[in-house]
Length: 96
Image (cartoon, rainbow, N blue to C red):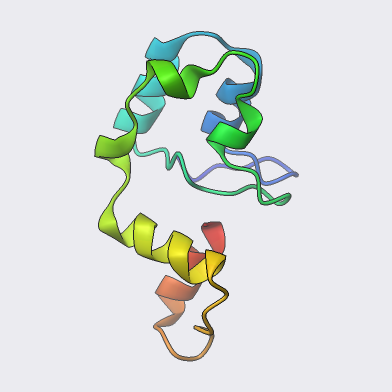
């Protein structure tokens, strides 16, 4: 689930734009897709899934970890983290 295209879209981002199949979205999340991961435009699964509203058909909260929630808040609140947290966490925060 780490693959991205030139715009930073993951398979889940692409599924949000071109499918109305909740089973596909559920499978991607079971395989490790992050529903809160941002692409290069800072868009998430919910941002891209405007027409099909798959997010209302799929309960993705079981797949959102505390680590994801914390990373999202660090990004949202613009909390300084570079050179403070381990490098591996820096890249994870940048995904959110």
